[in-house]
Length: 455
Image (cartoon, rainbow, N blue to C red; front, side, top):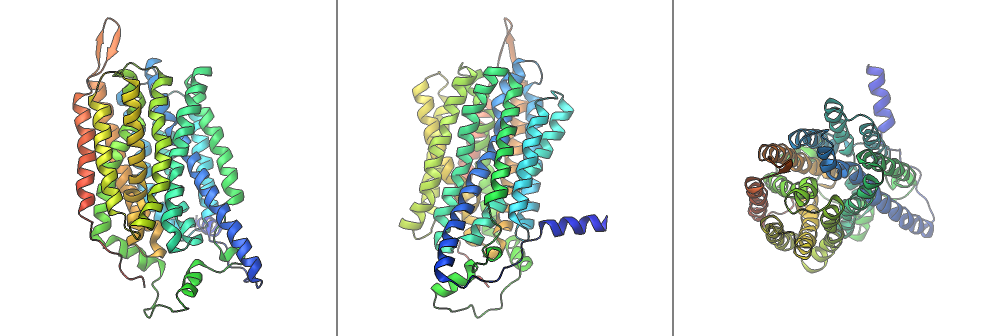
């Protein structure tokens, strides 16, 4: 057992530093190419994680219509992923600061893809809840390691812009899921939704393995820290540098990061209320078909990409790296847009589409800021993964609780009339909207929080 553990640790250990390349021109060229390779593979790789994660959201109504599962069972299945993902986000977030991110990310993506393939063959509740729960753990090998990779390759004055652009991966994955999977389901039934997501995930795992590099040092390039010191005239901190473990402990003692974690948890309640149940809600409450509902909810992906890409640029360029004002504006827009979607019950394609476009734009900004960047800004560089892990466990605990509560309320409200099932969403709507409002209030409490001097 000890020998196996040692082999695993050795396999995932960061690649050793190579001898520095002496040619400065070659260093600049190789650095530029490698940074783009890491950025693009992290962005599209994490997008494919999302395709594998959102497959169930698209397939929920077909599964209910086929009498395979009821909404309460789907809520339990969905929560299995969120809870395992939440724990995994914390554990793997802390681990990713110490690991070879190339291997860690690619293996996680491969196994979550295989989980989707398995579910397409076995429509059994116990199989679904176990395999979907395991998929959540492998999903947690995505976000934090990607952020660690970006932190290793990009300097602090680039972080906001590239982090925000990477955050668009959420919405790229959502766009693929809500466009491709309904077409596959329409072609061959619900199974093809899982199988299609699995194939996409396998392609992504191969891409990450080939193009996402572990660190600059492993490629014979200078570290980001050394480059930043050169920019500052070669001045080093007078304090003794902290090791990774000490830096990570400082995260747990920072009350501002805990408040951000709670704010993010509530934001994830409304985020996944729309992502996980939005298609179901649009079909059951507003009378849209599966394809129409998926297309309307899928609009959040397009506007979300715009929100995430602009968020870092705007905060870096116009607010000197402060995320507070754009986060507040996005929070208010989120509350207003979901209010329209949830409480304007008539099926009006134009109104519902506009509300989802605004919601996607706002959530794109909030995922970037509340879902990670504001905590990373307050954390030491060596603890970027730990900061993401703490935010992640809170966020997906909120998502998991939402999934259970939503499934129970929706199932309990079911009413059969003349052979047609209808649902009463009045109570669950208040829960979803209330979470969005509380998230904004909690985010305001960290308005004046500042990063401690890094040592």
